[in-house]
Amino acid sequence: MLLFFCGTSALYVLTAQSSSSPFGSKNHKKSKQEKPSLVKKVQNGNSNASSNGKDVKKQTKLGVQDAEADDDKEDEDEENHPPLLSNKSEKEEDDEEEDKIEVNVEFATDFIFRGNSFGSETISQRDNIAYKSFLPAYTFQPSIEIPVTDRLTVEFWFNLFLNHLGNRDSDQRFLQNGPGGPELLGYYQPALMQGQLPFDPRYVHPYKEDNGLKWDNGGEIEVTYELSKSKFGNVNVGFFTYNTFLAKDRFSWTQFFVNWEIPVAKFLNPKLSFYKTTDPDNLSATTGINKGWGYIPFELSHEFKIRESMKLSLSTSIGYIIRNNPADNRSGFSDITTTAKYSIGSFFLSANVAYRPDVEIYDNSYYFDNIRGRYQNEDGLTVDPSKQYGMYNNAFKQAVFNNVHDPLAQKVIIDSYQSQSIVRAIYYFSIGYTKYL
Image (cartoon, rainbow, N blue to C red):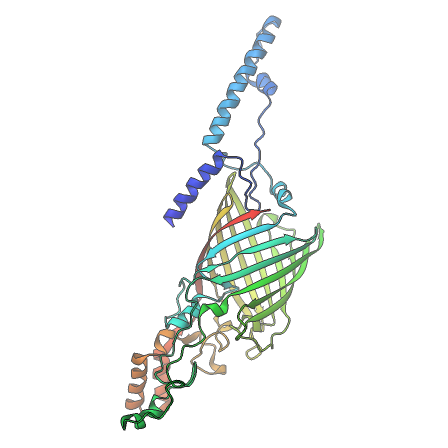
């Protein structure tokens, strides 16, 4: 992190000294600084009330020379010490970038959307690691936004994971007849003890499960239409559809939406939206998020202009999900996602946290492997992936079965050993670059 800030600070110095760069992130265009006219400087700072008519021309000439010297000095000062605040209004900057194609390249430590993790928690399940608030699942997320007309915009967005792509044998079972199949060692053990081979080793052996992050690589198409723009606020409608690339167990999700940019407290840019899933009962692969009936986010944001090409943007979104899946039909606040984005010219760095106020929304078998049944999924607990499979965990469970004879007591002990609280806060970071064409 320290190296990045040093590098970006050096980049800022270079961009501040050069005005030829055509690049600039959204709402980050450089503005020209208007200087006071020479005549005004002469009138205000170089005229002498006691001078006679003969000296006026001389004083004016001297004043112009002094003013020119002052201009040179101010130019030098501005070059070495850029103004603390930009004088250009946001409206002017928005107008400059209107109807331009926006290309965005971003590298992130995770793919988090509305409190759902598509990366880090999948890695936990794949690699038998306990769920954590921060676990890198590096991903490349390019996008391009194209203004088709003054009102219609089309965006293409992609998520491409960079590590943990391959499948892994997570259940660590010695003999199986397929990925995720039951352990057959006990079934074949009597014959094996007699020196027989009762199975075909070409088909009965350890298998890798389909758990690599390559299955989660996908792309989104979003179409937005500006329905109205008035003193009562801007209203946009549209839809997005997201699909993973690989055909097996393809994740598919489509929602229609309407959002309203509320014309109050404009410095906070309030926006209220409603998203409706087209088919919550579809049979596609799921993490649970594409099974929700609807979603209502309320967003706030504000941008602080530190210098001409240096900005800090703060934003937060409070999301409420309606009927999280067809089985549980729970509604509640699924996420509060907050972002701090630091921009220098076209480059940016962001720090993000997704907080889950109502963990019951995630406490189901759509999202996690739950310890208990459907009607007991309100304790905020799930199975710790590090205590589910492997020789040590199997030995612990076998010891419980051998020494505790009450089935209910066995279940309580094993559930207590394997349980983990659902992570409430997930942290992730990103670095990227934006260009307007």
